[in-house]
Image (cartoon, rainbow, N blue to C red; front, side, top):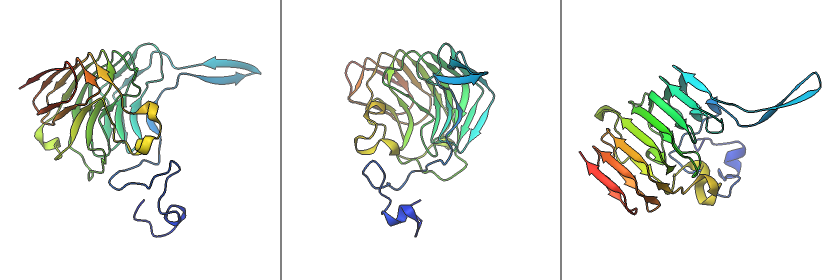
Amino acid sequence: MLAETSGPAYDIDFMTAWGYRLPPGYMLSLGEAGIRAYGAGTTIIDGEVIKRGTDNPTVLNCTIKFMRTGVTIAHATGRKYVEGCVAIACENGFSLGSGGEVVNCKADCAYGPVYASTYERDKKYDAEITVIPATVPFYNGSKTVAYIGGSGHSITLKGSAEAMESDYTIRVGGDKGNIRLKHGNLPHQNHFSASQFELVNETGYPVYLSEKSSDVSVVSKGTVLDEGVGNKVVQN
């Protein structure tokens, strides 16, 4: 976008509606989500208004490319289950909210994290994600491999050295660094606390335990910077 030399964005010096200039280094999708669920909606059939939501979604063996999110089903209710899915060149790979499970899934972090917590209240989701090499140049301005907030989870991140990008980090709580959340925009979606969950980092990426993390158990092949309280760290 910043390469444009004319047009509406150029005419206002790429100033966003939230009061800050569009920063370089990020990739924004012009699509929404590859697979997404919402918790409410209405349908009208023969004049009858039917209220409905999404319950107990299962997503199997899907590949999503070049979207804002790969699989985001945080707003569904009941059991949320995702298996065998791949998110490629998405701004965010997977988000389940509370009570979800991601099994044997893959994503790159070329344009954003492979996993991101949706809200600070997210609880008890389990995820097993392999970080795969990117097929496009990196435009992940936050330099975040995964962002984990909330409590009660079990997260395992896998991946080999070939997927590595220098100075990228697995972040636990704190600032997401997301382009859509700059300068205080949408504060309820940022600066999450993170507590009482398990993170197994089998990649070489470093882990950053922010000042908003507490009682998090980490087993990591990468280095760990702990600025939280009461965290337990084991480095392999």
